[in-house]
Image 1: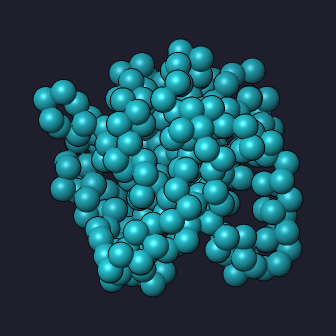
Image 2 (image 1 turned 90 degrees about the vertical axis):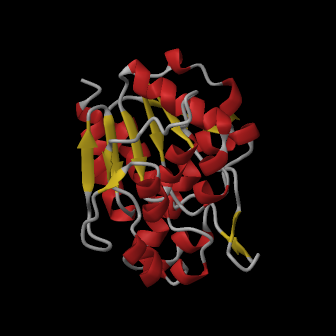
Amino acid sequence: MAKILFVMTGADHWTLDDGTLHPTGFWAEEAVAPWEAFRAAGHEVVVATPGGVVPPVDKGSLAAEANGGQEGADRVAAALAGMTELQHPIRLEDVDLDDYAAVFYPGGHGPMEDLAVDAASGRLLIDALDSGKPLGVVCHGPAALLAAVTEDGFNAFAGYRVAAFTNAEELQAGLGERAKWLLQDRLTEVGVEVVAGEPWAPQVVVDRTLVTGQNPASSAPLATELLKRLG
């Protein structure tokens, strides 16, 4: 059994362009689907957040319409209740990468607020690349890649191909025109190639040790790819 580190947002809001604080957090499916896959494979999950705060769930991700109906919403809510690791996170600043076989970042708009500018997360991502350990990142989770700036001022993921929440999806979700910045644009600006699939359809991109997913529907297939790399 291996230990897999879940790096999760500690932000319960996303600051929009007009200063409005949009309630958010992590997206439930993007934590639940990988957690279930990793646990079913016999692995242990450890959650880390900035400052060790309990990660907040985006309430919108618990709604029936976000889970294919009420039955799906009830299943996700029950799974979250069983994820006791969420209630006992460690401080991201204290993580020792040597303790883990792989690293995974769920999405939700929360990472746009905190992990995108979190120095400890940025260092961890650079170390994960250097270590050759599998690294999985989904949906808005790739916002965290923006903080992975090397000593020479370049982004450590420049030249990588990734899947991430697209401009089209952000606009269709209703927040794109109110955002300070869009994830696809910002990743492109720092030299990361965003491979955009159809909006809301599963899309997983693998580049070396990095496995990325575009949206919530990509969470489960991303977990499957990550598990392949754990042997």
